[in-house]
Length: 307
Image 1 (cartoon, rainbow, N blue to C red):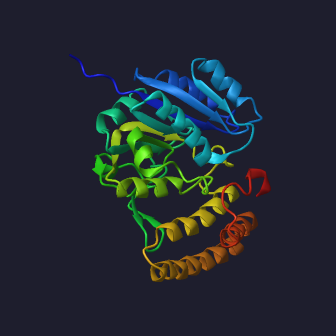
Image 2 (cartoon, one colour):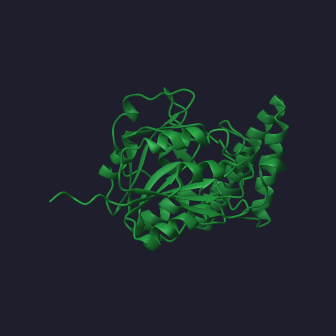
Image 3 (cartoon, rainbow, N blue to C red):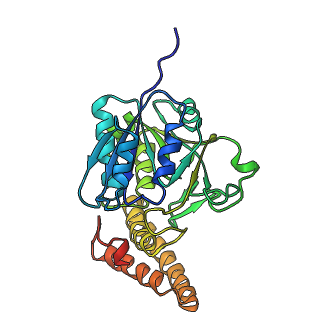
């Protein structure tokens, strides 16, 4: 008998995606994998993008939050639907991507009940370059290592890699058991670094992370947070959440003190570069992010229009 097709719940958190959602829907309709269902969580969109998705996928589970709940909370809503329905996997998927028809089949083939899998993610506007991150994470300094983000797609990114420490949840296939064992995404992040935190917790329960280059998607990068590699919105949450992430997983107070010294030395250098380049909004966002972490202001604090 043929093996049963694993059931995948595709979890999409939508936020004002009208500029690119048509292409996302068109490429998702062309995906060749038969065993998926779509769960869309709208995070208070005001641009009609949720209407577009519902029109393209009338059978999808559609949840309108009425407010910008952020990626972590929105993803958790979708994951709970997957668990309630007994799906084998949840696939986190940004809708600022364009998909290749066979990407999901390739992900599922590399996955199992103890393995998370991420695809090769290339820049939408330049398919020669790797977008987002998949690789190592240095917990002493709170920095990514060996992720190839922003570098040309080449021999090192054309082979499967196993035992990774972290990867972007722009597109990530997660076995449902990982949520039962490790818990849900930490909503105090709101967005950015919540995936590294979740992967760390899942790995503590014996789960593995694999990069599968046969699965390919194209990513616009920060499509819902202003566009581009670094925006004030991303700068704010990345600064605040990096401090929170390393504090949460630090092995000792001494380890966190070492990280803090490194963090502030490098932030001061970054501030100097921003001043020289007159990047006042990025500088303000970085300062606000650090200040809000020390004030204990986590979860959703500022939105795109605030920065």
